[in-house]
Image (cartoon, rainbow over all chains, first blue to last red; front, side, top):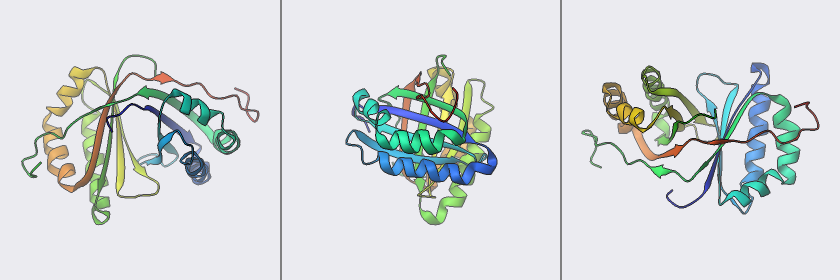
Length: 111
Length: 111
């Protein structure tokens, strides 16, 4: 994706005993956020070695779209109401548009 | 994390029938990369709605550290030798240091 966007990486963890409920709340938030007009993509991923750790990888058209996201009713209700109360670790970072990295030459595949 | 670093997000998918082997190869690559002197962190996450989709979230001290990563023997052997042959979708993007986003006010938690 080479065009301009804002990337948000939300790296969040719950207590191990809350991991399933935490993941369900993150999925519910993702579903609501995907309907925001300024949300380009919103996907939830789960750590392969710490099941209580998840990252949401969120792309917004611009910073105004991210502001609208944070001010939305679903962010308040699901994000603040269901996700945050279960979060014990939280690291959310914003990045501006990335630079694509092409595949390295691969002797086993024709690129 | 407020200090300077290079973030790499590798969003990769295999065929569904290769997902377990693909995830194991990504984990093996992560383990080797964490030992690179210039690798600040390297974590693998799996999509919660498409089990054959994984993201590696990689932080490097600087672009030279990322170059060293791409030129390493373990990247060639595991990344090119085991991961790439199973990858059917690949989107790798590089970002420079992020801006931390503080928690929104949360009526249900004392921040």
